[in-house]
Image (cartoon, rainbow, N blue to C red):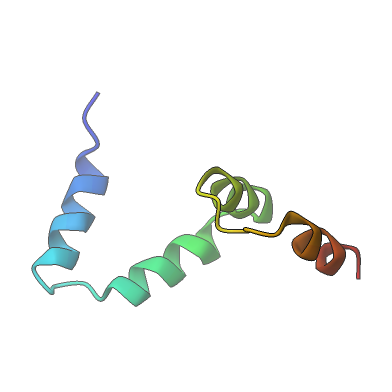
Length: 58
């Protein structure tokens, strides 16, 4: 299965038609908190899990 929408958005960012920061913010605002957390963990964005978990409890 091809990722037509994904490929089109990436192409538009590369061509300067879309601003990458706008695309990032749009994705993060669209996704649920669970989706964002899962994506962050999958991509190892939270290097120190303990710090993230402490902030989450506050």
